[in-house]
Length: 329
Image 1: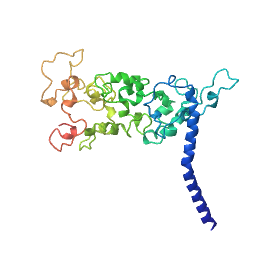
Image 2: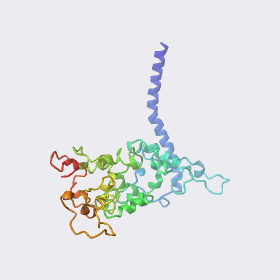
Image 3: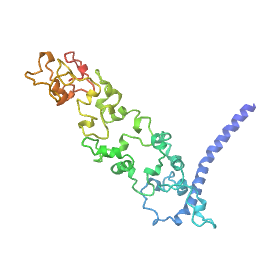
Image 4: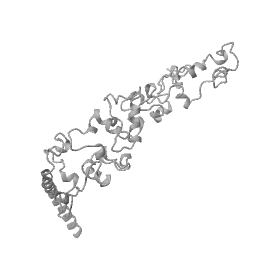
């Protein structure tokens, strides 16, 4: 009997709390609004930039923060102590002159902005462990937060990521400088389970968001393609076509042994390929012994992809020679 009464009382207590919670929130919001009214006595339109179009300035939205929501109650800043020479700063000052740790500033933002999946992995992420504050990238007292606009977002990222700025200036690059892509198309800067803050759990699944034709599965797969697109490509830009890290066949030969047949080619010991020449070549080295393969041309002047065209994988069921398992067409 006692246990049953206890359960009933617990249920009634939860119900009462549920009914009073909205009133408590409304009372708290009213207190914040009243405290913030003191701020605009000094910080008026002439003191702050025009920010009417910022998300934090929508008065009709109950979620809109007040001054004290972000900066704290700051009683000594609102009312200067009689013995103070200068007015003390607010409890939380954002920007370059912040005197408190970045984690303290971020906690003010995460009070509201940690309720969605995009920022659920902020804790422990690269930007968090680098002691970056939200205000390092975001600006609140403005109608145009650069990091939220595709055209200007990269300029904010380039402030730290200068190497990527140089890579985007190379001839072969994603259309980021042209404004058709932004950093956030591939990266989740607020935290990710993938490498380099990739939006998906791996580099490949992030790339497949646009390059779906490379996903496969293929009957004849190319193992590096399945493992990591960045094995061959530099996604930020390259001086080689298709954003490759090196020009074929040099790129391919980082993993594959070059063709050697009949002693033809530099690796096959053919004389005269590299100076100093070892005697004159009176006859062609491309004979039946070499299988007709001009290995010198393949190694020095052409590309593996002249023959191995399906480098991302092939579904060709043919059994002819050369077989599709060699990623030929």
